[in-house]
Length: 319
Image (cartoon, rainbow, N blue to C red):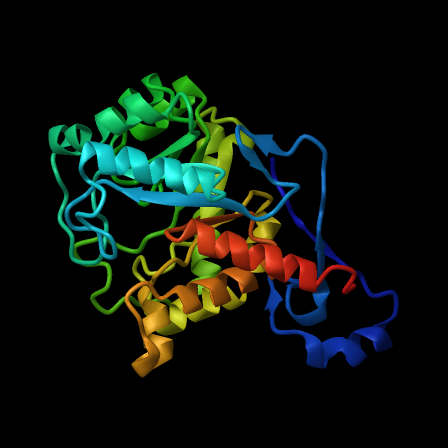
């Protein structure tokens, strides 16, 4: 399931000198910027349930069943509204729906396992047989219950750090999962986040976490990675990660990116900010596609799908 980037090697030193101006950064001896990124390596059978990594991007629709999520809290946390929205997201083009019962927006506080499960259980029971579901949770007990009901993917914003039992659940069930990077907990993560070099530090985080998980017996191809835009990052950190997200392809795992309606769009657009931030979501998502990102986590699935169809047609035969 892993992907990488094809890095063109220079045959002569003078060719290297001519291309220096086009390179953005030397990342641990590997050129990763400018014209160095040519194409994703395509391999056969790159399919994870409904996600096909040879046909990018895959769309992960967002279904928040919480009263306090940052963008749509309280809109879909009733059973019928939640089921209806899940169907709408899927029919609009989502490949999988990410269901969450605990808000992890900046400043949010944890909810009990019982409260989180009570919010999501009816949706999981009613939808999972018809629509592929991902479960957005940090808690091993919630993961286990969701997997029992047929959840196809676990999306843990803590990078499996919140609950020490999560690794055991994922190993036993062999359920695919997303490792997201987050600096700190949601309550405090946006209070002056700091990095010496966010790209290197987050790359190292993934490398160390993956090595640990493999040593614990997790199947290599059950892993996706998410740099965690807005999770313990300021505008500078977020922009650097988005601009150079292709760096993470060298780890060899599919990348998931959550850009939808995020605060960096407000920070950049100023007076042109809007409630749904659709323009900024589309712009950043199309850029991510150009960087080979395999999965986009999105609120407005129909609108993004429309933009992708037009975009792909416009760039057809470009290269």
